[in-house]
Image (cartoon, rainbow, N blue to C red; front, side, top):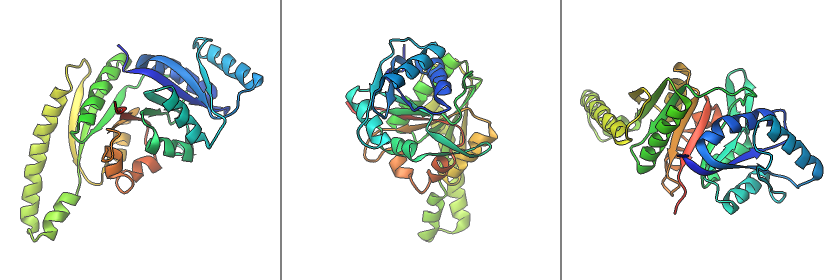
Length: 282
């Protein structure tokens, strides 16, 4: 059973086109029941020919729909098609490399993260010879959206035959700072933080169990610090292939609560492929 019904792949005529389509054929067909391309530009016979040729090279069906979006900025055009076609996952390779192993979101991808009404899979370095995601990191805030994100990530990890899924709960240092500001002595604040860490570890264990049965090894971690920075460091230390972030697509969803102050680090220097698991409102 697919995790998504309709996957859109945002494509441009760039050197990464064939690699992105190869990734879509490898990962996208595992994630979604059907797949279509989105090009933020006007349709021409030459463009149609080139895209059909690239589809064939990626072993994607020749009849794969191509949705043309000539009006507006690229991100607005892409999101218009997503809405019109009721896509629930958008794949894109709109990331730019600043230096080796350092990537950052281009303006189009940055806006997609903020505005897309569906889940996104952003690929840092699409490959013409894709490989499975072996090490996956899932960040949680215990929300309903986070439960759904973890359950989907575990199912996808099984399909990918992943080696491990790390589930990470970040304890912000903001809590201790608030205690100190209220006149609690640092020694007592540290005791409080220690108890909170122990409680969080128990909550996290229960959270993993609530996500359902899984066939992939799962490791739970409670870490402290600024969320974006800590997550980016954790991902690099574990050499993760995929980072999964939950989003409920509501006014107070995960990204809006943390972005930009805490999550800016992740979005400024994205540490690996990023899956924003965002459920559409019914």
